[in-house]
Length: 245
Length: 245
DNA sequence: AAGTGGTCTAGACCACTCA
DNA sequence: GAGTGGTCTAGACCACTTG
Image (spheres, rainbow over the protein chains, first blue to last red):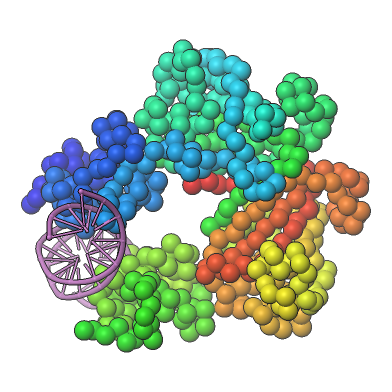
């Protein structure tokens, strides 16, 4: 009984109830029904609304907290995370100044173009032969000094109208939140290369200077690739920080 | 009532019961009472033994699974993880061959010496002025080609008698399991340097060739630093892989 | 069929926050 | 003091594995 009707037409879904609840709640965030920073109803109200026990609803909320969608605070309530906050928006920014600080977020977007995805882009973004992408070229600055040139590609289907926007968010995390895309994990390949002429010019270094090459794919919460980005970084007085668990 | 006496003299500990249970169970693994690969008693037996409800014991076991101490399999039982297994022992090995494979684990240990920790070592390993360390020098090989020179330092107090061993495990994860140290996370700083003469000779490259410098501190589960390692890596046809969540 | 972990329920009580 | 999330309990039932 109790007929989880409210959880949607999950006819033959084999997912456990708490996972279905998470999906339903995540959809509310993605669709904008619950805004970043807002409080959501308390556990028992939500449990009642969905016709499940409080313990099951708690398990769903705990899951979403681990996925960085929510923050729960005893005595206060449960809040929708604002991915644009300082803390969360730097989640995938691995470069650090010599003193350990994050590099500040200034960026200059030099180009946004739409095109059919080439072979490499289709491979890295798991797209089909007719899918289109936006290519974004950017230079990142720290204390007004350029330190990294970036070429990014994002599936056009996920970010409709991106080419017409006056300002494109310089962090994929912020961009994703604007388009209702929930972020999952990212994977980065770090290697050493030599600065090509265009990169060297933009960074103010000599051509063929060794640079760190950052090749990163960011996934949505459901695992779909969202962004493929290659960055060429002049590493003077900086380092790349990785954490392993 | 129910007097969690079995959980130990936790007089004024403010930790929740499930966290105290985790500590008690982790101690059994650390002390060798439960061996790597072995099955441990089922949930309800453990709950009875410790005088807690099955749900609380489950929460402790779930925690330990997330910490990679246990593996639970429906219908089979709960097993102590063998940290020396292929899967787990490569947890902190971020270097990959061009095809994405892990580099094979051959290593040649060239030196193990005991000494007082110098200033840098005390800082990185959070040691006091009189603490001693073992310094380990190693060269790692892939397909019989040396690709990385490593200098590691570990607190002598945690690995007593290490200097007298005929063979020192080449992975900190394996070494830690041998000494009953439970591992937590690691943090790595990646930068670009130039091969010093000794490094260049060991790797068979020209001095001053750009190399990737891997500066890593590995922590125990309780947060204590266990190993500080600096590696100089010739990156030809390889890359460093980072995952971000 | 017996034994294991995984899910779900229902309810009590505690710890924290804030008006 | 009212409201929130956090802990803990007790028990039912399900899904999977193995003899």
